[in-house]
Image (cartoon, rainbow, N blue to C red; front, top):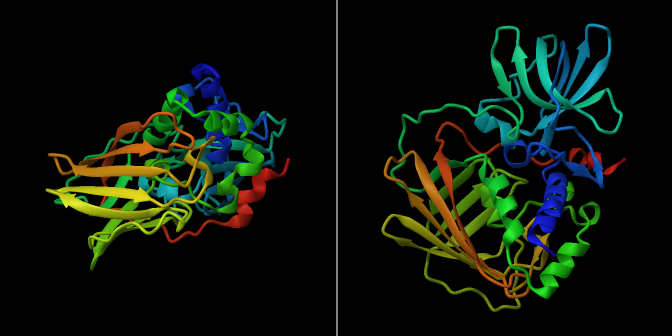
Length: 344
């Protein structure tokens, strides 16, 4: 299959995997798919005014119910706490009784009472960013600087979209291509079961990655579906190949101030390399996290190999932002909320 064709299908499947968040940054003219149907018209922006009825603060996405002046009740789907807390939103940002103007995208399913939120303007003029894809970029200057790669980091919110788009040019084996061609998001959609992606995709989400060192290991808490990774720093080897883990088995070491992580022993995973591209038990990823000179950013780079599904290694680098002002969310993934859009 040509890369362009694979990219189109990749966008469709990834759209569902991100719970219907429109991809404006790279593909603004393309809507996001859900079970093969375009759920929202991401190229269209409309405004609605009304009063907040309910703000349902849940992962993996939240729901804002408002009542317009003519009495209509409209459900606005917005990103979940893990995604919008780094943009300054919390459970008290929108309260029942408040009047708002909502910038939204309409449904493509003929549902006038169901829209996708982009940004919210409150009566005092404050802006509430409710979409990592559609909200305007937030100007931010970190006054606090990191002195190591430990601590709270938030990947740049373009990382995930760029990563998925780049996978259109990855070289796949025959088995990888066959699985890609047969990929069905309605069957393989792990996030509808509150299962996270694995590295490197997991490390691209614009959620908090909190790295802390405890005794002989480093714990990476990625604020997405409760995912965490343990990086053993005590010099141990990987277990025998027959032993496997969903997030793999990670061993690490320091090279000056850089944290280098090698992860193997992954379980077979239908979205293990990226959405629509599976991974096998021979998957291996080498990651490096390097503190940049300013101390306000770090570079996350990786080299991914998987002889079962990738015909050539994949390597890339992305930027993380130091964010000591945010922590890992206490909001667990709500299975009922995660599955709600599986129903037509």
